[in-house]
Every structure is written in C-alpha cells, then in structure tokens.
Image (cartoon, rainbow, N blue to C red; front, side, top):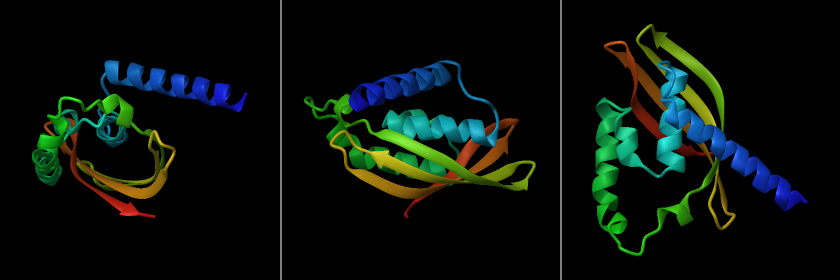
Amino acid sequence: MANTLRLFLLILFFSGLVHLSACGYKNTPEGVADQFLFRYFIELNQRGALELSTGLALDKLEEEIKLTQNVRMTPSLDLAKHKPFLNYELLRVQKRSDQAAILYYDITIENPGGKKSERKFVLSTTKIQDVWKISNFDTYLK
C-alpha cells in the first residue's frame, strides 16, 4: 500500500512539473528559481538551465557542461535511470533591490538507488531587461 501511495504521489508530482515546464515560468525570482531547480536537478539539464542564467551562474554551468561532456556522450548512458527525486523548501527570499533577490532553500535529493543527500542551496537572481535570471548559485552540505 505504501509503495502504491508513493508511486501515485511521484506521478502526481512529475505531472505537475511537466505542466509547469510546458507553460514556461513566472517572471519572478521564485518562478525562475523553480524552473532552474527543475532543469538542473530533475532533468539533469545544464544546457536548459543556461537559458535561465547570466553572469557567474552562466560561467559555472558552461564549466560543468565542459567537464561532463565526455560522460554524456557515452552511447549507453541513459539519463532517465539517474534522475533523482527532489524535495525542496524555500526558506526565505532576501530582496536586495527591485532588481535582485537571493533565495535560500533546503533540498533533499534521493537518487534512484534510495540514497538521500540533504543540502542548502542558494540562488541569486537578477532582473535584466524585465526578465529574471539566475546570476549565481551555490550548494552546501547541511
């Protein structure tokens, strides 16, 4: 029964995420942060996260892409088998100005093998020409 409930909740969760990703994202610090978290952690899609980024975040993602390029080109690699379950909670939003905000998260990542990792995640957002972008991000062990 517990496995059935968990499967139902996972399906419901991913259906909601697919709906959110299909509809774009809200042009707010929280909206761009949610979309970034989805692309970066769930989809394992740094290239998709690039579209939401600027500045140092863009540099970090480009470096990650460069470092993982050989692994991702492995013919037998099936990223779907490696996609984690992500649970995150927005702890607070610190407005720096009308053009910048920092978002603080608690994140729990569960890989398909069942191993859990708890982290703190900090996202800096910047408004550029009326569009919110991720300008930096950092992950810390809890």
